[in-house]
Structure formats: structure tokens, C-alpha cells
Length: 442
Image (cartoon, rainbow, N blue to C red; front, side, top):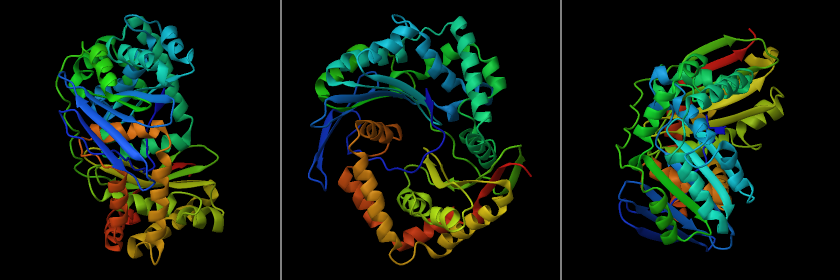
């Protein structure tokens, strides 16, 4: 199972639907294609969305649960992730092997991940096998076995996963940075949990979480590909009819403050791993668009300013990039660079200089137009993937925001002005407002 700990600022591209009633939107794109997105909310609160994509023979489908690491108590840190693991140990009618084999035998795939604010279960199959995929997904989400013996085995698997992160400093540095940056707020808690919390987890806690959070009002079910909405809704209504409506989970509290300054966590390693970062706007904020443009210009590829300066001109690193995540009530923007201990200070100085330059001057003449073209191209290319379209369907529903069609989204990118760039750069890019965390030798 995959785990998501940080994002790289891609834009989601859904179209507008009204909540609570079946609806359909068809939005022509600049390329002349048509978006066919439909949404229905079932009586038990499940939001069902689909996008029919002409010319494909596959379907990507998924179930999202509004439950993630940020919704946990400190004592139960990591419970969302271990529950995600546990549902694959068996259900009311399938063994662990049968869960894995049902779709793989058809050439399909099944996966899951846990993030800060939700848990997702996803399948990709040929269109003719969508009934099998939906049956497996409903099985996993609604009737996992959750037995004590299975927990003892899976607990060891998760402890190995935690150990793997601890042995991977370029992963560990992000965990440490988030924990320090958010000053005890739930957004800074490790998705995997800790050795102590995972070791103490009980099957009763897992069953209680499942009963409380895996309910209709917290579920979003979506599909993209060669799918027709009406039969898809009928299938979901039949397969998920046992899900109670339940109580919608509350949004995570707004962080009161974030930390800044410099921290060095000493560790023996061949590289020093450095993360700069500050808070960023929430997903619903219009400032998300200019910040993504700034981030792409700074560290979004081989032509970005940080890559050209720190790697190509100075030869101080192999890897340097920007990243950002946008949550319901806050966000995170930052830079990662990995370098040898002897060059760590020089690399950090070079990163600070580039951040300060953009924070003070924006993107300069021609810089904004260029990065707009780049980001818009990336958005449109991403629409060739049914997986990307699946995620865009779910993303805005999970954030409870109006959907944006492709043309609307591109218009928002085009509408970003130099003053917008300067404003968000001064607020979020200035290294004086960042927490700089180094993991490596002194």
C-alpha cells in the first residue's frame, strides 16, 4: 500500500456539480474534447461521481473515506493507516489471497493509501470487469474482518514500514520537518504512526474507528473511463446499501501558528538532507494558483531556478525541488535539497538566495508568462490518464468545494497577475519565514 506524505502541486481539474442531486456538466476544453462529469448523492450520504472518457477501454475507480492522520488522537497516531492495511487481511467473503487475486487475475490492479485527511482504495480494470472491481472495493470498505490475529501480523508489517522510513533519510527529513513546523498540530503527525502507538494499537480501536468513520456521509465513490453514470450509481447503491448514513467528520482545526528558524538533527549519513518550509494557503484559497506557479518556476523541473542554480551552475546537489500540499484548513510549501555534509552550508545559502530573490522581485520579465504555459501544459497532459481524472473527481468533493472545468481552471491560471505572484511570494517564499531543518552529520 502506498502512503502519501507530500505533494508536488499539481492542479485538479473537475467540473461543477450541485451537491445532493444528480447532475451533469459537459465542458468543452481548449483541445475540443468534452468533459462529461456527473454526480449523485445517495440517501445514505455517499457521494457518487463519474466521468465518461471516450475512446478508452479501462475504468479507474476508487472509494475515499474522510479519515486520515490529522483526524487522530495523539494516542492513536497511525490508526488510519493500520486500518487501511487491515482491510486487506480479509473480509466477510474473501480471504487476503482472494482479495489480491480477484482483480490481478483479470489483469487489473488494486491499491490503497492513507494521507493527512483521507484514506483511499482504488482499482483499475478493463471496462467489462468493473462489477468485479466495485464488489471488491465495497467488500474492503464495508465488511473487513478486523481480527486480533491479523492485527498481530500486520502490526509487524507496519513496524517494518516505519523502520524503512527511519532508514531512508530523504523520507525521514519530511516527517521531522512537518512535526516541528506544525508545533504539535495534527497536520504534523506521522501518517504511519510511531513504534509506540502502533505497538499499543488494539483491534477494538480499529473496529470502533471503522464503525464511526467508514459511513455514508464520509464516503466518496468515483470512476473515470468507459463508464456510464446511471448503471454506476445503481451498482454503488446496491453494493453500499448497508452503509449507515453516520456523522460527517469535522474539519481539522486551523493551526494557530507554525515554527521558523533553523534545526539540525544529527545523524550519521553520506548526505545532509535539508528541508525549508512554511505554512501555505488552504486548498480553497485563490492564493493556491499563484503559489503553484511560483513553486513550479522555483523547483518544478530541470529548467527551474533552483535546479539550474544549485545543481547545474554550482554542482552542489543531485536532487533539489519544491513541494506543496493543500489541506482543508492550511497548507505547506517548501524546498528539499540533498547534498554532502561538506557542501550543506553552500547549498543552503544558494537555496536561500533564490528564495529571497523571488520573494523580493517576483518572477521578473517574461517569467510569469513562461510558467503559465508550462503549468497549463502539464494540466492538459495529465488529463490523458484515467487515474488523474479519477483523483480530480474526488479531490474537490473531499474538500467540499465547487468543481472547476478545464477551461475555468486554465482561466484561473491565466488570471494570476504579477502583483499576485509578488504577494504570495513575499508571504510564503521568503526564507525568513521558513523552518529550515537539516538531517545529517554535524
